[in-house]
Image (cartoon, rainbow, N blue to C red; front, side):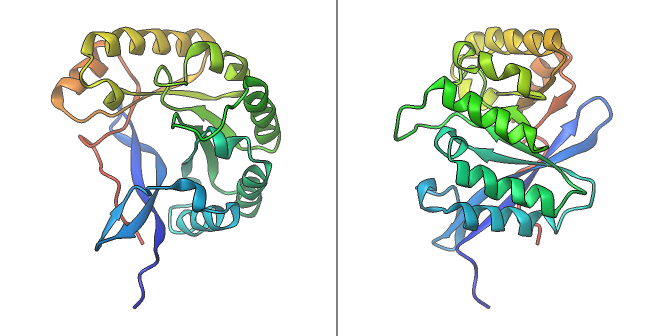
Length: 220
C-alpha cells in the first residue's frame, strides 16, 4: 500500500487540573527516509492540499473535539488559505476548529495591518484564533496587540527557551498575566520534563501540552 507523502499527526492538549484531554493539535509531517518529519518547506503545500489533510484528519477524531491547526504569518495572510480552512469548518461544523498563528521565519515582510485583516476575516466566519509562540521571534507584544480582541487563547512555547530559563519564566509570567487580565485561555506548550511541570504548577497553569504527556503520533 502506498504511503502518502504528507499527513497530519495528532498531539493532545490537556486540562492539567483534571488530567483530561482538552483538544488535539494537528501537526503537518512529511514522510522522508521511512519516517515522519517536519517538512523542510511548508510553502509547497497548496491551500487545497493542506485543508484536505486537515479535513481527513478531523474525520478520524471524535465529534465535538476541539481541533487546532498551525498557520505561519505567510499562510495567515493568504486569503485562499483562509477560505480553504473556513470551508473545512463549514463542512465539519461539529468540531471546534482553531487556527494557531505560529512564529516561523517568513519569506516576506508581513505588516500588522495584514495580520489584523486576516484575524477579523477568519473569526467572522466562526473559526477561533489562538496566538502561538507568544514572546518568541517576531510574535512579540507590539505586533500581536492589535489581534488580542479577536483571539480566544494565548499559547506560550516553553521549548523555545530551554537555554534561557530566567527569560522563559519572566516571559511566561507576563503572557499568563496578560491572558488572565483579558479573560483569554492560556496554554503552556513544551512541557517536556518534570522541571517544566514544576514551573507550570508554580504558576497554576490550567492547560498544557508537551512530550511529558504526549508526542505527535499517527492516529489513522
